Length: 209
Ligand SMILES: [Zn+2]
Ligand SMILES: [Zn+2]
Image (cartoon, rainbow, N blue to C red; front, side, top):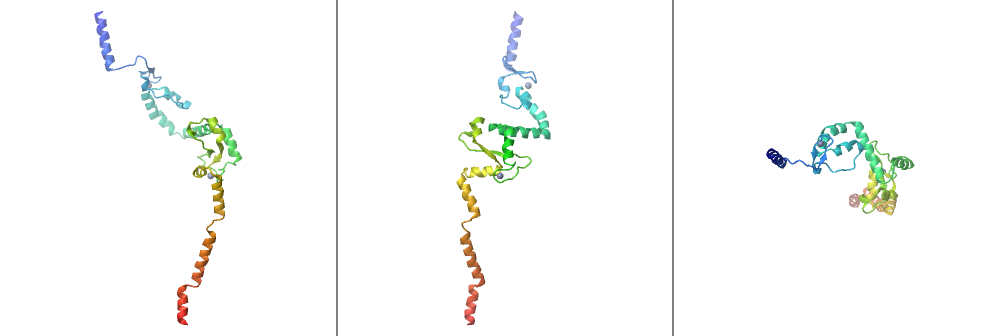
């Protein structure tokens, strides 16, 4: 009895200095039972990194330092990342990749604005009508707002001009018929007249007479 009490009291002292959770989570990698706070918060991630999210924070850190760094250096992994980010963007607008490709085919694979092909490592932006609280919207709420595909620059131009078709029409007309042209032509004529018949020459001619 006496010895048992001693053991238990010494055990509790050890427990006091080195807290070990009685109810915790077991890391499937290092098999340690840890507090919940020692595990990274659960996030939705791709299947390839699913394993690491179940792990405790120290294991995950170690994993990211070694394996993930090695994987990141692999060009095949880079390609797959690019593809998954493309698919992410497409599904964000309630579309599937085949439907994105269909829109792209309708546009002849080029930006609907400037008619340029995107760089090989880039894709055309999904242009859409802007809504309030857009970031919180769900894909099915964004889907009806999709207008087409634009290059990044053309997409930005539309944003800068607040998607105003009249401004764009005015600007197209402005480029074809610059309003300053008649004034500039008149000014050029005056300048040419001046050069043909400089005032200094007139003075000289008057003196000669
Ligand atoms: Zn672990
Ligand atoms: Zn463009």
